[in-house]
Every structure is written in structure tokens, then in C-alpha cells.
Image 1 (cartoon, rainbow, N blue to C red):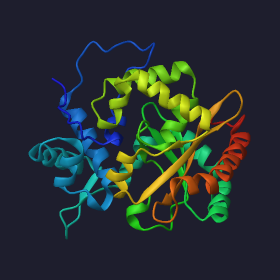
Image 2: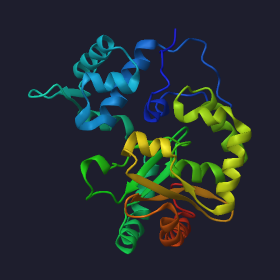
Image 3: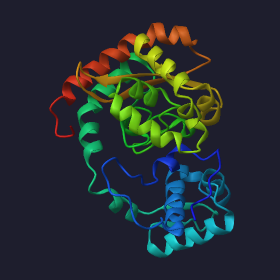
Length: 288
């Protein structure tokens, strides 16, 4: 039995599901449904932040509320989640940090790009994210949104859907063919709404070719509508050299302040320049 999923599931939850990589041996047993559910609930608590109540966790996971409550109680007993005494809100504890102590690639990249990212924010006046491709999502490793309103903040560790964001599309259009094929095979089997285009490869290939030709990608309108109430938009470019791609960087702006064309005219060249500087610094780093 597998975990039931709805088309509205958020990509960060889809991204956290373990996958079988090419060359790995397929397990001889079925995944433990309860284990998958508790991981999805934990990911939901982490992503939702101050909005992590039972109703919101149910909404983003598709798991029924009674099961969500049982999973939360399990996580509380294990020390990974606590319940706010004054509100029906759940929060991750410091113990969750122990789950990622062996993964430090993002920290290395974050340290390398942080100064350039801060300077870029000062130069253009709009915030940006730097992200790495992480199996089936773009993992944000550094952001200059720190002083933005709460609804606009994005902490390091956010997993952005590949096929809906300028970060993901910029990366996917420029990565190796084998990496792209491996990812699209996984995405096509994933029912998340963002992945619909992965099931229409002719259309997707035309889209990716256009991104390569123009040198940048833009956020999908549906993503802007779902996450930012259609108030924000973004442009993304790959962080790459002639023979290697490292990640992607975007710039996010208010649609009421800049038209799409004005944003491209004003922001694209500086964005490409900072991406090139980052690529030079990342070449030969311990992260790659």
C-alpha cells in the first residue's frame, strides 16, 4: 500500500520522498506507509513555519487530519516537534538539525556565494536566491531576502519545485542530458501539479530550448499565483562555466513595480554577471 497523494501536494513534500537512483538495487520490500507519512508531516511542519497547524499540514500533504495528529504525536514523543501551548501550532525542535549533519555541500556553496549575493542585492535593490539541484528539487542554499516581509522570506533549505520556478527551469535547461532525463523520469511519475509538463516531453523540450536560447528562465504564472498571490515574479539563470553547471540564481521583483520586459532589460545582465562570478569561485571548490 502506498501513501495516497493529491495533485495539489507541494513540491517540497514530493522532493523529500526517497527515490531509487540509477544503479541502485531496488528494495525487496514495500515502503513502510507509516514511515513515509511521518516524514511528510515533519517536512510539512518545517516548511509551513508559523502556519503549521493540523489543517494546513493536511492541506499540503493530503494526509487525513486524524492521521496527521497521530504523526505529530509520534514526532513530539521522538523529540522532533513541539506544540505551542498558546496556539494549535507545531514547530520543529533543534533535534531536527541532527538529521542533516552529514550533508555540508550547501554550507560550502553558501559561504562561497554569500558576499557576491549581498553585493548583488545592494546593486539592484531586489532579493535573490542561490540554489543547487538536489535530486528532484532546487535546494536554496543562500538568500538575500532576510529583511523582507514574513510572507516573502525564504530560508536556506527551502526546496523549490524544478518545473515551476525560474531556478529549476534555468538549471534543467542547461544541465546534462542524462541528468535531465533521470530527473524527468521521476517527475513524470510524480502526480504533483507542477510536474504535468514532464508528461508532455515535446512541449517541455520546446520550452527548455527557448530558455537556453534566451539565456534565462522565468517563474511559472501558476507558481506566482499559488505562492505569492501573483504579486511577485522572478528571472533565473544558471550558475555555470563552459563545461560545468553548479546551480542557479534568481532575482525576485514586484510585478507592480516592473513589467516582465522592464525587469529583463534592467536585471538580466547584472544577474548573468553575478552568476558568472559565482561560477568562477565555485570551480574547483570542495563542494564539487
